[in-house]
Structures are given as C-alpha cells and as structure tokens.
Length: 210
Image (cartoon, rainbow, N blue to C red; front, top):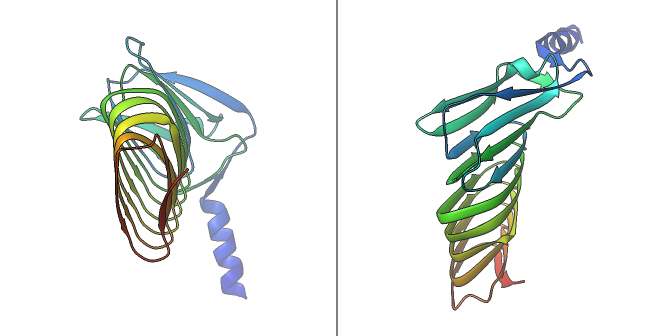
C-alpha cells in the first residue's frame, strides 16, 4: 500500500498541470514541407501556394513554453519538453505553409489538413491518431498501424498506395489506381471509381468501395 501511495505521489509530481489560462504564440521558424509529431497534439494545417509560412502554438500559458517546434532538414518536429502534461486547453499547433509533402504522426494526435496539392503526399500514422485530409495530388501514400483512422475522401488522388495494419480504418479517393495491403482487422473504403484496384488482404481486414 505504501508503495502505491509513493508511486502516485511521484507520478503527480512529474505531471505538469495546465494553469487554465489560455495562451497563443506565433513562432518564426525555418522553412519546412514535412511535419513529425507524437503525443496528444491537435494539428491543423492550411496549405496554399504563395502563402507566408506561419506557426501558431496554443494551450495553457504554462504549457505553451514546453511545446517544442524544431525544424531540421526541412521537417518540423513537434514535441513536449516534459514527461507528462495535463492541459486544461488542448495543445494545438496551427500551420500555414505553401506546400506540404509528408506528415508522420504517432500517439493520439488529431490532424486536419486542407489545400494539399502537388505530385505526392505521404502520411505515416501509428497509435490512435485521427486524420482528415483535403486537396488534389497525383499520388497519395499511407502507412498506418495500430488503431489510426483516416478520412481522406476529400483528397482527390490519381493513385493511392496504402499499407494498413492493426485495427485501423481508412477512407480514400483514387481515380486511376488503388494498391491496398491490409492485415489484421484493418478496413479500407474507397471512392473515385479507380480503374484498377489491387488488394492484398490478410486476417479479417477488408477493401471495399464506398
């Protein structure tokens, strides 16, 4: 019993509690066209050619300074400089960029991206991430594991290549070709009436038209 009490006190001491006072902060960063994040972020990305890059970080005023936004090799890395945080206001990062080619997300992040365009966009999801994508691209590539969910019916792609494992769920749009590899209980629904659909399904997974 004493050990449990000590453990609970230790955990409480390691947790940064949100103050309850909301704060937003604009940050000037080097240019990037890819984003990596983990944990429990809400990420909103607005993509538009010619737009001026901008990054706004929001949460409790004592948590915002702990949200790290580091750019290296053209990739924005979002992380928290504290072992455990308990915010009263969600940890939200809102981004405006002229182009975006990739997002790599883990944990339980929520992601919304609008205005995607260009030759290629790649999305890597793991854990319980939830994502919504919109735009027009030539090729969309998805690698998803765990219980991640993707809503990408509004992302009109010519070709889609996806690898879905675990209990994930993905909704995609392809006009020409869909290559889908599904294992576990993963489920894929597709729109766009693609001319070619290649399925490789194992376990109780499925690939079906929407």
